[in-house]
Image 1 (cartoon, rainbow, N blue to C red):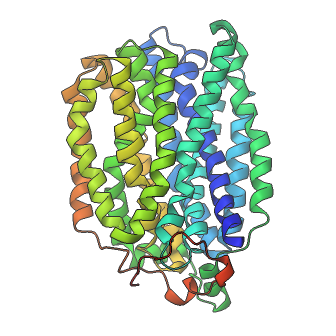
Image 2 (tube, one colour; image 1 turned 90 degrees about the vertical axis):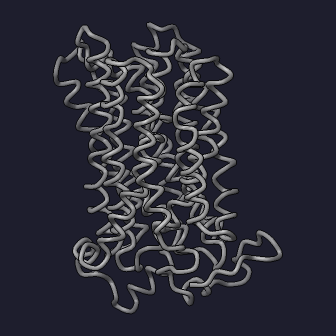
Image 3 (cartoon, helix red, strand yellow; image 1 turned 30 degrees about the vertical axis):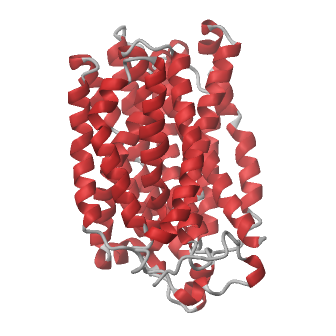
Length: 445
């Protein structure tokens, strides 16, 4: 029962954090470019709006250092409670902001400030949610446990895009732009209170608690991380860049690309995103479970190869019809990217010892996120100059995927060689184990 509650706590908080973060991404192309960054030129407005979107990604490494330090020194639970407050509070305030027409340049300045707070909070949330699950996992199912908080991404985005779709369908264009877009942001306050209540009832992870009891905590986690584990930080950055660029396109910029350059309606673009994210909800736990049998590395490579092969065909096929648009979104995002993402949290966390795991995992991942977060700015410029050019966009994606694929091939098989400790994982009462099958995969640590 404790394990189930802990998994639910890691998932619930992750869902709400990503709901808030992706609300901004959805609103960037649909609302903010018009209401907060009016320039008279829609292309320039979109470019500026996506610069603020990227600012949230740029702030994530700052959050990874702040909350990574707290998570490795004080505890995973305390850090995660603060990330919830930061994310929820900033999202709620975005829903109250005046527009450019009301207060002038102050409006975009306030919007950017709140976006930076969002990024800082998310920079600490992802790694902590992953560790809450993986450091409490019974031996042999760490991959499955690590995939559960990853569900927060599709669930949060589905919730965010569904809220915009619902409100858009119930309001006129004028009503939506005047006040309808604010409602999903204001609703964050209710969700955050619920998540804080859920997380307040969980215990610290066994592996961190053991480190604390034995006095083995790092004095300055970020210093020790870069002194002893800098290669793994760089490895994570490279492993994340390839799928990261494609992911930001598939989950954020696609709304602008499909509506402004392919001629699809806003509702069609939102529906394509919602369907592909709903598919991820099925893919992620299945692949996470399989990773305990065949290894995180193998699955990671398969996902990267699949995305690489379909990079150019994706951009060629999605303009053909609504059906093909939906189908390619499901394949690229709902299946192939979800395959990679389901293993990422566990794979990356297995590279670091417990005393710097929160910091190392978070810093590497969030530096990569900061880089890929400015992809929409590049794509907005590319689209303005070349239009929907399949070979240009596809080649861009291939470059990043090749880098990640090479690093994945030479990465260690962390299912067999890991920094997690056997005796911590085995310290679980038999009645707390989640029985998944009569035969569990053997994991050699």
